[in-house]
Image (cartoon, rainbow, N blue to C red; front, top):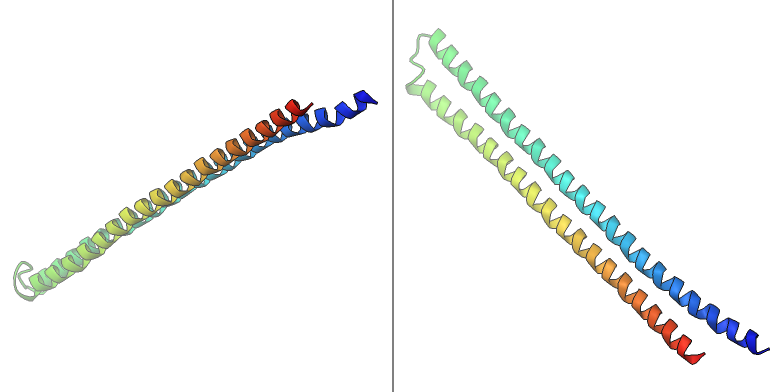
Length: 151
């Protein structure tokens, strides 16, 4: 009968120790999940930045086409393309094209910045999850030690 009364508490101690390992493993898994989300956020930000940079490059390409058309039409009409209304139209087109390019560049920088911030949030959450898992594991080890001391 004496052996039977010890088996239950020994199993409880073993269960607490297994629970400690499980708590640590859960914390580690959550940290890995958050790390993957952080990497995904950074990748998404870089992808968005590339798309915005492409929009900027496209804006410059359209600007170049517009300027070429203005110069060609002015020349075909016997007008000096570097003065008068032809030059005014070119300046307007350049202003619009450069504005569009700058907006795209700003959006690219914002996409990278937002992605970095989101990644940092995920990394911090991952560190917290791991820390929580360690604390839970240590608590369970402490409970197991206390129970073992009661035997």
